[in-house]
Length: 342
Image (cartoon, rainbow, N blue to C red; front, side, top):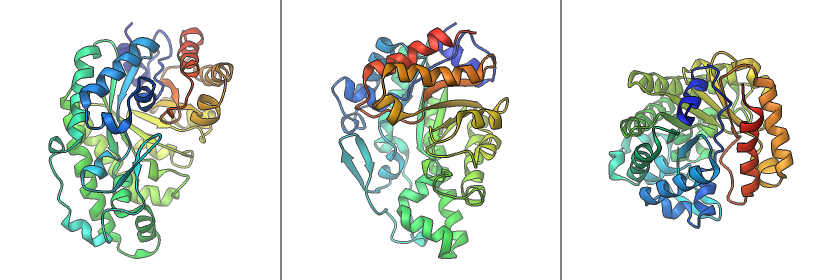
């Protein structure tokens, strides 16, 4: 069974030959092989080359396409900063106020730096698509993109106190259209799965009621369009997601990528036989600062909860930081191979 077949079986909630493993090492890989997020966000061929090196050297089952988590907002003119660990949002946003969203001009993603992600996807599919699962990030989900365009403080204040209900939804609809325009191009480039990161819709930041009104319907719309186009969707949300896990499963997404603050057993109980889970070993205490033995222990906890069922891809809870020891990533892959066999 190839890695791609293994992952697709898990996504279908079936049992493969062994548990698939895809550490979220897409940013880590760039630095490990001597490059940076900043360099690769403008060079899709280089990005793909380094991902292929990581895949061949570490033998994980799939690859993500994403150089950072601000690409959509940045392509529209939102400010970003370059940090030691990658490209991150700058304080503030692009829009002076929520009403200014009506004047936003949304370009063809191919005319922006997003085209490098499309090119990277195309290369990875050509070079490894028969063997490995290619998950291309369509970057932010609609809620997070809207938040980055407004600035987090302004957007959250509008939701809580602003009273501009229809203006908020108008921006979310525009963001959904832009997310989809990019996701569609990634699917057409051959991605097996497209992923959206809606980190700011986390239960750590918003209430279940806010999620239901402002995040859920737009995630659901992205899922509907991806499926209509013949693709598969994964939704990534950082932080605590126990309070919204039921609703995430109801968006229609094929995969939920969830973070370490969410209890694994609880997440499995809520989502089992409804949606494939990907996660959720702690990226900091375990992966970055732990030992290989700690990594194996945490991986085995998850494997033992899931087996004998399918529907799970072992991974980190979020993108691995550049300071993560290579031996810890090897330990995760080895744990899946040794203990994840069905």
